[in-house]
Length: 85
Image 1 (spheres, rainbow, N blue to C red):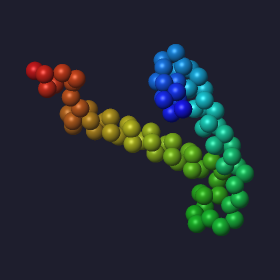
Image 2 (image 1 turned 90 degrees about the vertical axis):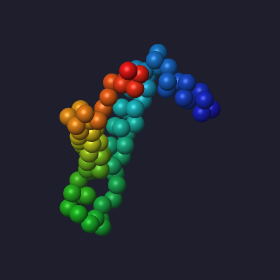
Image 3 (image 1 turned 180 degrees about the horizontal axis):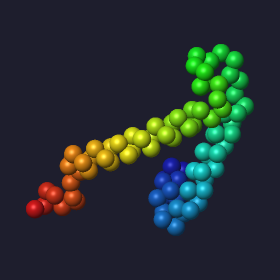
């Protein structure tokens, strides 16, 4: 079962299907957040439907951009054949 799933996800012919499935899962998760009861929240922004999804997405994008900037500007990233020279 897991082998079939990994082969399905890893196959380039299924990339459009995998992308559509992922987007559908994100949309369902975002919409389901509108049905959560929010009576006892600690922070005011926790009352906003979809806040967790938005916060998580923006946080991941910032982490990726910051690590790419840090890797390129501080010369941490190397070429593929760096050790072969």
